[in-house]
Every structure is written in structure tokens, then in C-alpha cells.
Image (cartoon, rainbow, N blue to C red; front, side):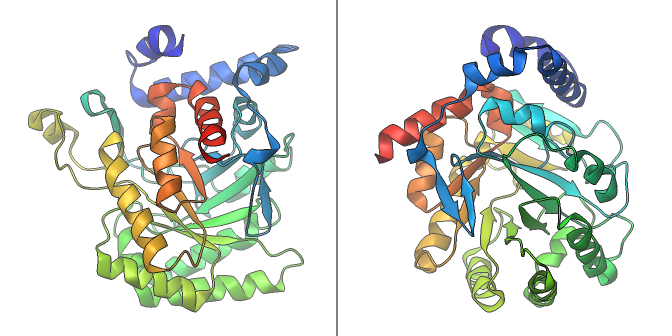
Amino acid sequence: MYKYFVKPLFFKLNPERAHYLATDCLTFASVIPGMSSVIRGLYNFQDSRLERKLFGLTFKNPVGLAAGFDKDARWFNDLANLGFGFIEIGTLTPKAQVGNPKPRLFRVVEDEGVINRMGFNNLGAEDAIKRLKKRKTDIIIGGNIGKNTSTSNENAMEDYITNFNVLHDYVDYFVVNVSCPNVKDLTKLQDTPFLLTLLGKLKKINATKSKPKPILLKIAPDLNNRQLDEVIDLVAQTEIDGIIATNTTTSRANLKTDQAALDKIANGGLSGKPITKRSTEVIRYLAEQSNKAFPIIGVGGIHSPEDAIEKLEAGADLVQIYTGFIYEGPSLIKRINKAILKHFT
């Protein structure tokens, strides 16, 4: 039903407007008595063999929602009804910011991809906490944290530390995002010296908490093998809990979409099917070169159960979807979980 009726309707709208309409519809449906149970009945697939235990957490299934969809922790209670094993909120910054000028979200339908230059638009970490305090679901919630655009790279560390402290009691794990290409100069923070210092400080702060939380690093698909080797060394030195591979790409190689259309869209991070292969390559390289020394959450171009299984076989322990969720609809979660169960048991 989604691909033949719902998706064509939403795809006639501006992508950002369609996003809010879709989430508003989900919220409206969830407040109708009994409808949450109906949604769970349609989209949930539960089996204890799907459980995954990583960094002290038990995930009811290995399929999560990537950061960017529920930036402000508005819809995680309702999204949990769709069968996700975990949901990552954010990217959150210490202060609210409007992000980049609109339009800033574009579909490249011929390639089944999305280009975005949202720019960490969010209402700020403190605002998200208001809704996290009203959490009605036991689903695992990850907190993806970044810096405000107005904060210089020289002062970026304080933004990450502030976010970490503010959100610590309200999320189950943290993701340090220094790989988004849509915030000015952010990717420069992927340099090893900065990350060694930042992750080291976060680890020290974490150790002082009554309940330390797992810390993961999200990396770009555009890193070369030398840089990926540095990531492996970084994990070993800082003893962080894992890697999320990968974020969006700045590459436009081998797209079917007309070049004039791409020029009109201009800059932004590309997600969806065009990065399926590269994100899997990054996962496989990290897993093989590190001898599977740390957990990996695989994300990037998962549009089918086969895509998810490929990433798991490459070395991912969990997977996340976003663009595939938009193109394929909520049934994708159930289909992936069923396929994983069949393939690996």
C-alpha cells in the first residue's frame, strides 16, 4: 500500500514538508484509541533470536532508525510502534539553531537517494530532554551529538562535552558526529589529534557517572584506507565502544540523475542506494583490518533485506535505515528482521 498509494502522494510534496506530514500522520494515528496496537500488529516482528547484546545493552532486534529522522526526539514513542530495535535521535546541539536556508532536502528519485544540507537544524538538547522525560517506550534510544554552527572548531570540544553531560541521563548510548558534510568545517574535526582529545575527555567524564553510557563515533564513507586505519587505531587508543559506518557522502560519482539537476541542487550529503556499496566496503575494511575488535553499526543505502544482510555479513553487528525507510516504507523493518532470522538461524 505504501509504495502504490502513500509514497506517490508524499513524493508530490517538498521533501521536508512531506517528512513533517508523514510524522504528523503517525502521531495522529497513535492517539486514536487502539491504533497503536494495530500499528504494532502490522509492522512488528518479534523473536528472541533477533536479540543482540552489545556494549552492555540488549537490542530486541538489530534494525534501527538512523539519526536525522527524529532530530528533536519528537516521535520516538510513535516510531517505536513500527518495529525498530533502536532509535537514534539528533543530531542535537547545545543551543537551538535553524540550520541551513531552505530548500535543503532533495530527492534524487532516479537513483533512489536523498541529498540534504540540513545543517543540524534542531531545538537544542535541553528541549529534547523535555520529551525524553516523557518516554513511554522501552526501546533503546541513542543520542547523536554535534556542535553548533556558530561555534568555532577551536571551541567545538565544549559543545560536545556540554551535550554529553546534559543528555547523559536520558539516552542509552552516544554517537559523536564529526562526519556530517552539511555543517561548515565540521569534517575537519575528523582529524585524529582532535578526536583523541575529545573522546578521551568524554571517556573520563563517562567514568564519573553512576551509569556510564556507550560512546560511538560516526564516520564518513569518503575516508580512504589510511584514514580508516587511523580510525581503527583511534578506537584502540580511546577504548570507545564502537563505530557507526557510515554518514552521507559528498561524492556524486556514477549517478543516473541528470548533471544539470545535480548542479541545481548543489552541495549536500548524499544518502540512499548510491552509497550502498561504499558503506559496505568501509564496514568490511574496518572489521577485517581490526580483526573485529569493536562493534560496528552499519548504515548507508539499506533498501532491502538483502542490503541489510550484506552489511551484517561484512561485519556489522547492527544496522540502521533512513533513506530506505522513505523509499520502501515501514514494512521494510519487518521484512529485514524476518530475512535476518531466516538467513542466520
